[in-house]
Amino acid sequence: MHLTRLSLINFRNYARLTLALPPGPILLRGDNAQGKTNLLEAIYFLATTRSSFARAERQLVNWQTMERDPLPFARLEGHVRRNSNTFQIDITLLPSEKGTIRKEMRLNGVKKRALDVVGQLNAVLFLPEDIELVTGSPSARRRYLDVTLCQIDPTYCRALTQYNKVLSQRNALLKQLGERGNHETLPGRDEEDQLLFWDEQLTEQGALLIVRRQKAIADLDRLGRARYRLLSDQQETFRLHYAPSFDPQRRPLLDYQRPLSLEELLPSAQAELTVSEVAEAFKQHLRRARREEIVRGVTLVGPHRDDMHFIVNGVDMTLYGSRGQQRTTALALKLAEVDLMIQATGESPLLLLDDVMSELDAGRRARVMTMADGVDQAIITTTDWSDFTDEFRAQACLLQVTTGRVESVTLDVK
Amino acid sequence: MQLLVEPVARLIDEFSRLPGIGPKTASRLVFYLLRAPEEQAQSLADALRDLRARITFCSICFNITESDPCAVCTDEKRDRSVICVVEEPLDVIAIERTRDYHGLYHVLHGTIAPVEGIGPDELHIADLLPRLDAMPPVREVIIATNPNMEGEATAMYIARQLEGRDVRVTRLARGLPVGGDLEYADEVTLSRALSGRQTME
Image 1 (tube, chains in turn red, yellow):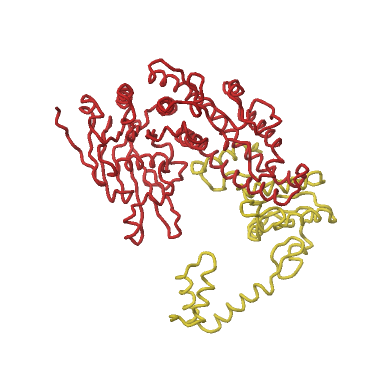
Image 2 (spheres, rainbow over the protein chains, first blue to last red):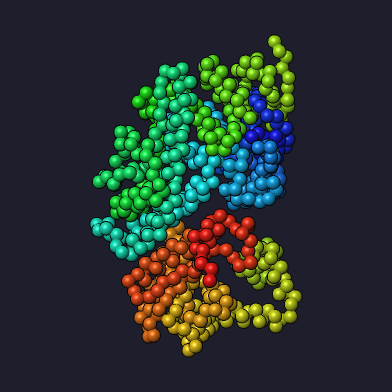
């Protein structure tokens, strides 16, 4: 699939932009702070309906518009060609006076829910800060898994929304029970009755998340292993392990908070369990954690506490990886994500690479260029044309970004 | 300096506190009342006063009423062996409109929503239990809360409270709206309708 046209109004530093895009590799050159990344962010926004950068969506609306116009708004529109069909996604951002922002999404001009728009355009975004997926907190890895899975699995997306709603209600209830009750004894009949519904919803939706994550991580493990082997010139072996907050195959441990060690994870990471089996195990773990959850006023087990581990040559990269290994790990994961999307949708996703070449050595650069050549469309930002080989530049579409304007250029071949 | 005289400004403020009414609509309403015949404003004022003065909650079913107990609870012709549990007084009207239900009601005045701090104690759930011991005994409790997350949580909680009692607990069916179109039904509703399908008679 590829993007044939992109229009932006008041998005970040683009007051107004209309850009026709050809299939194949596209190189986007510009100095710092000209709007290269903003362009990739806009495309990724159309794919996922959320920003991968901004802390608040308000920041996405051009600040000059915010100050000048009585009714500020930002609008993104993309025309996508997929399987010889073309369709159009547009998203309008409307900031309100209260500081919140309203998002309106349309597919071919018809208003849709975010759920229906996510996954229409598939994109994989490569950023220099991808390394934080390896070095950062478990929440970054969960967010990554969620965004990736939502793009290819609408059932997952729906279950995730539902799970988060149930989780916040359940946490509020636990807090109220904790403030009221006596913590010496197990919760009474009435507390149990109040929790029953939320427990059932949490385990039902949560089990689906766990099963789908397990499957996706097993796929990413297999695909990532092949990618890592190439990137490291057959030197090192890569494994990706799912670390669910509880082991769905085991009875609850006496001390359920004890983190599961790697050895304990291995067997269950292989086995495929059904949603109802996982839900039953989830329920048992919740029951076990009951008193502690009420005392602390928060849900202690469940997919909102999952993690995954990157293992290279038997060593956990998050804790002990060298900088270079961590970078290669992040790159292998992203490449595996591309493969996963092809496997799930039968089409290659859009690749969006933000200034990743500067971080890589010549061999890895060559691999990235080969990959960018192999997909329907890849958009790559750079500050320097010479990061790319002459052959690559010759067949790529070259665009120059200067202060929110984009112009196509032709380079004199030296 | 105040641009509007105090009584006008005050009524505008009062109106704009109502749901769905902003400052513009509020001032339009106020100036309409200023120009309208005096009786109209008077009758609005009376209606407002009566709303709070004459309306109370029925001590049996907690529906809004003028006389306690309410007209439904005192009606000899109604079937006293069935109680329909609803969230709001408006739901009673909706069910009455079907003309198919002849039992009694029980109005909860809300649903369980922990995030908003509403638990069973904030609703009229405990008041339902003593009603089951009335003579003649209640055979069935129909739980008619809304089919959303909070409504389902409330329904399940009530069902648990009624467990072990000699009463049949039922829940309104979920599925396709009559006169609707299959192709426009959302996936969740449609899959509920599938799992709740019935044998043709």
